[in-house]
Amino acid sequence: MPLSTQAERAVAASVMDTLQSLASLMRAIERLNETADSQTREHIAQLCRLAAEMAQDAHNELDLIRERAAQPGRDAATRA
Image (cartoon, rainbow, N blue to C red):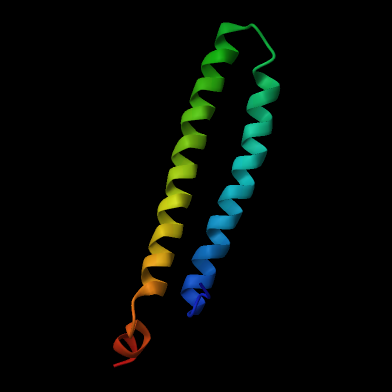
């Protein structure tokens, strides 16, 4: 579904940036996971929680964009 407004395109770009950041974060978590140190393991758990929150936020933003794009006549109503 094409994005119809500059704001929607900006949000979509932001979401894509978040997803790319998540990929980097997950690679870092994988590297940290190779250690047996308990303090590092706790740090990994915190990073996993952060990654999950970021993924959920990105998913929610994409859902919102899709919902807005699917609303018929939305652009006409916002211009009025």
